[in-house]
Length: 309
Ligand code: RIB
Image: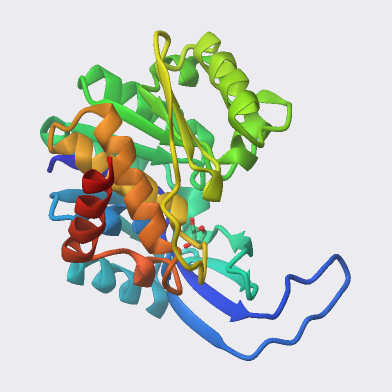
């Protein structure tokens, strides 16, 4: 497999509301749907849809959701041999509220994702010899992420960390293992301890992350675009104007397309452009995996962007 994603698998329970509730408030919406989600699973599907061989390592519970989620991943072409089924817990659930502007809030019951440990690390190690790129995120235990990062680097893989969600301070060792880190503005602010909300603060955040030992930093800022930075250069990529329906999984689509481009041997600059196209398309449709673009749709928008350059 060219890409191995190690991360979370959820069933997303989504309610559309006119506006997001504030603390203590109930807001009545109209539409409800249950769709396949979870950051790791979404990223793996984004990669598979672009035609790149990908394996997902993770855990589901022994319940009907778990089986459905695995079957869905298989139908999208994701290798699920690295997913374990735990009879002692439930599959991850995300409770998502999306407002009329496409903004969302998410609360997750981690379930099986919280128990991803030795068994899954064993599966991960079996897949590493064929892996070129490893994509990790933080909705599984941090100790597992750190071991997986060490293993990925020992196998000379390019290691991408999507630092979402930020639950703890990241250990210094983890920073030094990361080839590419991809926070959005909220995660970047949490990592660096000041507000990241535009070009200047994103550049300051990137230099902080370089000092922590990360080689390449990509900070996404939604409609403002994204910053790419390494220790010798940085550039800004504008966002692509689209009608936003639902921003859930935009970051996963970005990371998936980025990893797919790198697996194809594209330059980092091109890979960031791929990420931007993936993220832009994902926000035009509802849901998580249901919003991820097909290879054709992706190719059309990518070509338009290349012509505009
Ligand atoms: O990144 C989006 C994902 O975050 C959703 O699919 C949900 O499962 C949450 O984990």
